[in-house]
Image (tube, rainbow, N blue to C red; front, side, top):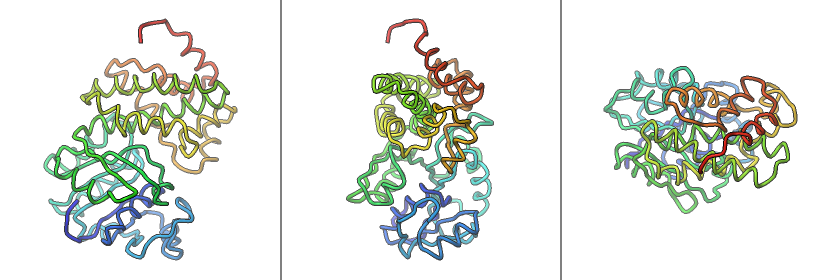
Amino acid sequence: MSAHKSPIAVLGAGSWGTALALQLAKTNRQIWLWGRNKEQIASIKDHQINLLYLPGIELPENVRPETDLAKCLNGANDVLICVPSYALRETLTTVEPLIDQDTRVCWATKGFELSTGQLPHQIASEILGDQRLVAVLSGPTFAMEVGKGLPTAIAVAASNKRYAEEIATLLSNNNFRAYTSGDMIGVEVGGAVKNVLAIAAGVSDGLGFGANSRIALITRGLAEMTRLGVAIGAQPETFMGLSGIGDLVLTCTDDQSRNRRLGLLLATGKSIESAQLEIGQVVEGVRAAKAVKEVATRHKVVMPICFESYRILYKNIPPNEAVYTLMGRTLKPE
């Protein structure tokens, strides 16, 4: 992001968008935090806290909540998009006519687009063109811990090395460290697949299968993630980093993960609908399971754990049956 003091627009006032707005506010630049829900934004303005998604964390005065998108984008040289994957295309389409040609755009959105199988950078290229500077943020992060200023590390991937370095510099301080990467495909694939595997990990733990099962699932899940990434152009070493194994382990093992919690609830016999209602926020892994299954099928990539997650979510297969299907697969070399 740029060195001058123009405002930064953060689009998406959920937990992650709010946490990143807090982090960017430490630069003392004006941060616009945009959300479409007028009641929620009014509440943030009244309390200077996002009571719904990041309770207990006070926002500094230079974070300004707003529902007027044009107002947020006016004069902003940098835009950070923090919306769910299903809303990315609509958001970019709305943003495109409101920004200058030299406005840089990055996102913390994770997941394949369900209708097309495209990754976020492919959608951005289609809507914003190939010449605009774009980047993706991803890695093992929970919003509440970032909001509290606890030590955190993420990956920033961009095709333009200097742009990635500028974002990393802007985000980083004593409690937040950003590493750069040139592999946007790998970073985005890791962010998409880990949510599906976290549902499987939650199911396994919810059924009481123990630590051996969990680590086997994570390890073999990493192999699936890497196979899919390499098949569509990623660098295999990316999956040994923060956006690969780092994000995977975090999401599969900590109950702050909505995807893991969904798996835990499904293991108790709850329906997908009631489990998502209890969690109260978007569980990205549900849509991701279908998208990953379709992309993997198209590229002829074998992903048994992800496929069983898909069957639990979309074919009403009992969770314990899915686990035993995995254990009964034909033996082969690792």
